[in-house]
Image (cartoon, rainbow, N blue to C red):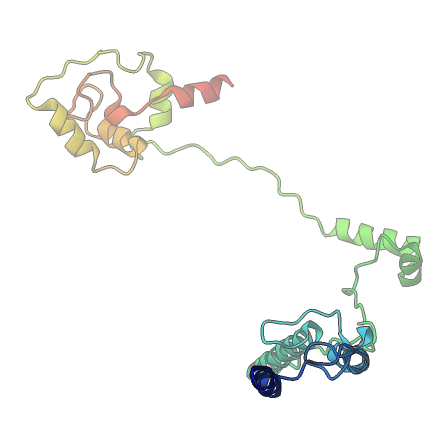
Amino acid sequence: MRFTLGLVALAALAACAPAVPDSGAGVGFQNYSTYEQQKAARDAALARGALPPPDAVSSEPLSATGQAASASASDDAATIAAEARAALDAAAANSGVIPLQASPSNPAPAIENAVGISEENNFEAVGAERSIAEDAARIANNRAQYQVVQPQAIGNRPNDVGPNIVEYALSSKQPVGTSVYRRLGLNAASKFERNCAQYPSADQAQLDFLRRGGPEKDRLGLDPDGDGYACGWDPRPFRNAVRG
């Protein structure tokens, strides 16, 4: 009886246990042969459609917008050309002068020489324009039109024109800064600076200084050191010119 119950229990357990897969089947597949067939089919599909062929991918780089670089450059060139064309048209409308259309098919511009000027570097052009005798006649004609102005004496200065600073520079002998004439007065430095500033140049100051009784007299304080030269005037350039 116990043996019979044991057999019944084993049979019940066997009925509840899952079926053991066939030894010829792979994990998750019906059998290994079917697995091999499906793997081969999947590899063939990947080889056909998963990756594009080498000639389907361009080696040309993409621009920042995702377009091909050549297409982007072509678009930029077209935009620049259109803007340049619009600017030239606007300039022509304002000036009334039609701009030159740059094109390889345009004829070479004609070169026009100024009338009467030969192309000295092109002997054939010079010979075609005129002969050597004609050039010589042209040179002679130009020389005949030259006018030589002869120097003329300017005459003597009249005696009533006042002092002459050139004559004074040549006649005076004392060096600049050597006290020769007596000078008295208060605030000599400030008076010198104030009055000398009224003259546009030292020559003008020296001329007025001589007209007012200088170098012996100096009412305006133009020569505070008494060397006979007002407001820093220097006679040496005139003396050096005579010696030279």
